[in-house]
Image (cartoon, rainbow, N blue to C red; front, side):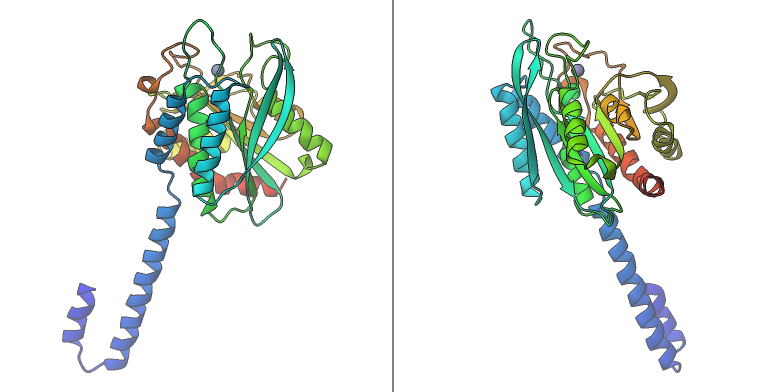
Amino acid sequence: MRRFSTQRSQRSPRKPIKVFSAIFAFSVLIIVSAISVSTQTLKFESSRAWEHLRQMVAIGPRPAGSPAIEQTRKYIKDELAKIGLKAAEQAWDDETPLGKVHMVNLIVTIPGASKDRLAVTGHYDTKLFREFRFVGASDGGSSAAFLIEFARVLKSRRNRLTVDLVFLDGEEAVIEWRGKDNTYGSRHYVETAKRDGTLSTLKAMILVDMIGDRDLGMRKDSNSTPWLADIIWGQAAKMKLDRAFLPALTTVEDDHLPFLAAGIPSVDIIDLDYEAWHTPRDTLDAVSARSLQVVGDVLLASLPQIEARALTH
Ligand SMILES: [Zn+2]
């Protein structure tokens, strides 16, 4: 603006050009501010995710079938409703080594240009421990908190794929991780999608789990679909965030396995080197908003490549 007023004093006789450049400068200003507004709304805000995490940890231990997980569901649904999103309940009773447990996946659908879908998932239950109080700040809290904030961001994004955000119940073993005593929610989601014929529109799945670790370091999981993991880890490297998205490999069993078994390209974003894992120390002290921010930034920046690839396959 300042440069324009200097021009005016120097070239007073050339009025039409002056008017034209004024309009041009004004339009540029409008476009630039429009772009900055849209990037602003597309920012993953870890301060919001942190508040969700704090509120859910404050509920206490949240194992599948408990009154506390019912309260957690209410919290998630209320927070989504505040941003104009409705979570559908996918409820069932599952057989566990401790008998029948009532479980509920929460599904939020954000329409995209295509009917083909991307699922972004994470569990919101915490593992049942009778011998100590386990509040799962990273293990269960971080994924659920992340998904609420990610939903807010995706709602204002122009999505090429329809996105299903799925809050999975029953990821944790009721007793011990073996046989079918784990991943109840993801297995139920995939089985239901197979039965109702919606699995064919599901083109990719991104799972987040235990992403709150203060000292975030996530190795690439060898069970995950290579192209999907490569896009995300490659994007992180471009953003110089490879201290969090480590290039080294590991092998993880998690909620992505039922999706992979059904032929859906899937990736698990998880920090397994978490010192507080399944201990009374998985509290707010062990996690940080910064870690949620890193995952939010990398995933958001990876979406265009994931959408492009998913739509050509
Ligand atoms: Zn766990």
